[in-house]
Amino acid sequence: MHVTTRRKIRQAAALLLVLLLLPLSFPAEAAQPEKTAAHSLLENLPFSVDGGEALTVKTLHYSYGNNRYVSLRDVAYALSGTVKSFSLTFQDGSVYITTGAPYTPAGGEGQGFPAQTQAGGPYVFTTAGILANPIFYNDRVLRYPNFLAVNPSGVTDCYLSVTDLALIMDLDLHVSADGMLLDTAGHFSIDLDALEREGFYCEVHSALVGDADTGEIYAAWEPDLSVPIASTTKLMTVLCLLDAAAAGEMTLEDTVTIPAEAAVLSRSADGVIPMTAGQSASVADLLRGMLLPSSNECALALAVHLDGSEAAFVERMNRKAREIGLSDSAVFFNCHGLPIFTDTLAATKVQNRMTARDMFLLCSHLLHAWPEVTNITSLKIAHLETLNADVGNSNPLLYNVPGVVGLKTGTTNMSGLCLVAAMEAEGADGRTHTLLAMEFGAEDSPARVTFSEELLYYGLQRLRGEAPADAAPEPEPADEPEPAGIPDNAEDLMQLVLRRLRESE
Image: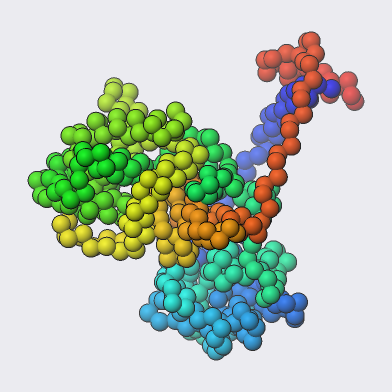
């Protein structure tokens, strides 16, 4: 049978089945309790280290099944005496982990959640949701989402995503409903092909990881899909500003007079750094304000300073996109990435858009033309003297992943949570390369962080020659010629399906 014909018949048959079952598909909605950590699924899992006797670890499935957060005390207890041992202490809401140090039990490790807790009884979590409670890991301060909890004996514990735990401690960890298995001689690794088959990319709109120095793309998901890019827009803004400075249109030593529109934006819900119309600020402070805390008003002030109006600067951005070879999918409406409404009767909400492939090209160009930009994007904090502001970098990967030097986060309702990350690492050729990993459309901060780190880790494996290149996709089978008499409209196609189903009885 013709491939397309079979596909049409299957689709029509599926549609018919849905229509027949529709009245049965909507049972009365049960009352749902308020969602908090305490209402999430609590589970006791067996945990075997190096094939030894299984101990018990407490696991919390936050919001959704298999979104596992595991007790750090239980893991530390299970790893006692191994090469992966670590000490664990708590102070003032912070978690302190020291690898290679012995763990001192505090009580309750390896015993699992009490039966009354699993039946809905109290187990005290300090918050209803995930927070980035500081984790001091040896000499680094990490910013991973986690829960703090207090067991019935009053002992504080921390629940961390099993994926993040494996990433942080380089654990060869395998997790399923049957339990957790750890090989202390192994290392954390990413099999992106296997993850893709399991739906890895379903979390985002598009994603890509590659080498900015060679231009090689290691893996990509919907790389040519045009998506809203939110504040990652500011990477194009800074490229335009630095190119203009090199051309003598402005200098990085200029003093900028804050325009009225930037002052108004600073006082809106999307404002970051308070400003007053007419005040003076340095270009250097405005650049740091734009790239670290993602100040929209800083971007606007710089755009107006250079071109006299945001509209003129946006024209520059779109010209620059064509000059550096971006596709027609790269379209800019403003200099900062916020949604805006068109000035028409039927106003349309528009956002800057780009593909992941375009963003890879933009960032590769930016890093080659202006490698100094990472002197800003790698800063964790900065004091902006002319703006009287102390700011922090919105990129959590600067804390979590050694070698990360930027670049930019972004968030709007439509874009979801976006992150473009740059990481410097040594390749198999002995040279330092810059990896670029980007995702657009994560639904929350934990997903954005973990997904981006997994992309970077896979890129690092490829850079070091530790992971095989993606297999070339098998070609789609060629369609056979369409036989005559196959209707194109849904009604006639449905009749054909019904007739053939009757004939097959």
